[in-house]
Image (cartoon, rainbow, N blue to C red):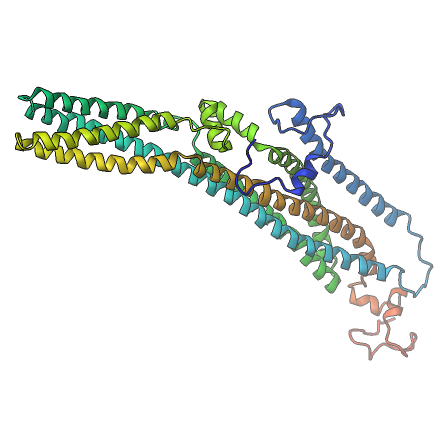
Length: 460
């Protein structure tokens, strides 16, 4: 298979393509891209299910840790004034979780941007290919209409004017036959006319899906950013209600992170299988959707010396016919105009039509060459298999960092909650054990607390 210009499977494509695959019965599945086969679909679903397994294990670990912390913690001795151990560990755990979350957010924004750039490059290539195909159809239609109009008007008028000279009428009819032959040959060059598959529609569908994918990831990134902000505020202000809000949001974002990780992993594996050898699948799919011959599709998708131009014969015959028409018109102008001056006007109009047709024909030859559409094919592959795949891998790393950071934060919050001081000001004056550690140094616990802010002596 010929490789598109500038596209080579990357190291990430080779690495992901070499990963083993298995169906639901754990039987090996070939790594060739075959989304229509049930075994291959099961292999990708199994890759996505690994993220679900990771989510379940994370939730079990968090639940076990919280139950152990709440139920198996030894009771503090009465009157103990020493702070609960583990404050430094809680602080560093929260700091590590926040740092990992911030790093993950940055990686996520970069990965989302890379994926969006790759999909945009794919859409641009499809739009350019649609422009080329539309230009081919337009040029063919314009040339056929011009030649048909010339046959119906100028050549008919010329035959009527030259009727007294039989040999001149025969030359005019020869030009008519040549023009009709050219029009017939040109109609076969509009190979995409009437094809149900439109690159424009595909580009619009891709852009539509990408818009919602981009929006979903931006919302996920913003949710994690809010979690980080609530964590900072809750720890800085020692606010328990902020910690509660942060816990609920952390659980939500944790589930979303593992879910997105499964989608990203399955998509990356499937995309690597496609990108390792895209030509066979694209050829077969396009042939099924369009009904075009394999010769035409191979010429444009492969574009190498081994595949000949399927339109070369039509182009050669059309070029020869246009040259013959031009020679016949020059001969008629030289022979007929001196004897039939009224023949000059249709002859000049025919020459003008022929000049415009020849100019459009050369433009059509350039558009029909495989270089242009093959370049668009290569640009689409580079956008999908390089930028988009790289962005997916960064998003996968973002989801992994987010899941780890959120799990760490959820395990650290109960200890942080236990270290928060009581919010009730009356506890400072109640004479209970909880108020004693908060008394200023050097103040006698048994003395009146008139000088301590916010305290009043209780009446006996």
